[in-house]
Image 1 (cartoon, rainbow, N blue to C red):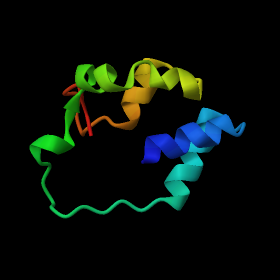
Image 2 (cartoon, rainbow, N blue to C red):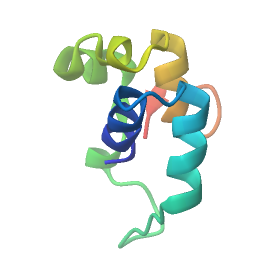
Image 3 (cartoon, one colour):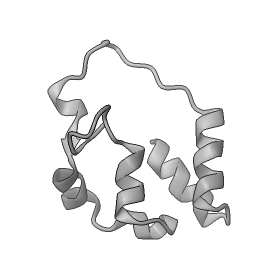
Length: 79
């Protein structure tokens, strides 16, 4: 949901940095459990397989896109 909001905002002319900041300021994330479940975390390859080069629609690189969902640490997963 947050990534889609970012895509919409960049489509309206905001820079990726401005869009990211607006999403951060206006979003609240809640979860039903304090621990990650298996379906909540994906490898970057899994994400890329279903999204394709989605980051191109926001004018950012693959690495910048993947950094938005980096799950604590450098384990290469998207959360």
